[in-house]
Image (tube, rainbow, N blue to C red):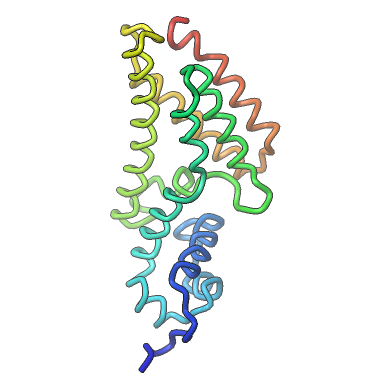
Length: 201
């Protein structure tokens, strides 16, 4: 006998992807159970049976988002040999990804709740962890450039990585506020131009 309320053709992955679109557009608090079940094509008992609760669903959505959306942003850091060009490509890829016409603008993780009063503590902690991981990725790329002799060992890789992660977060807010690709590209170009000053180049 099938679980009560669950459509016989229930596709868990597809339902999760549709939930991601709702959370991305409306945020955790702004996404009602009715919004989610309507988009997912299931009723509340099915949601709870498949995902546990709204909080667990959001945490799973966050992991799906980080694995599948905007991966080209981070691949630029690894595939471009010159570190300044890699950072520039990372920012330009961000500008493109955050302004796609067929999806919500900005980044689900950057735009997620910043305070535990807005979202549950597990979600707040997960969002903070993901944002901290972004700084780590940037820092590791800078450390690689130092190890390869491309950048001086005297630079503060943590500070520079934090700067570029903060620029990216700001681009997400700008995109959500209506900034188009042109506006985001201006930010990317300006932040890339600052690279030499930040690294002593």
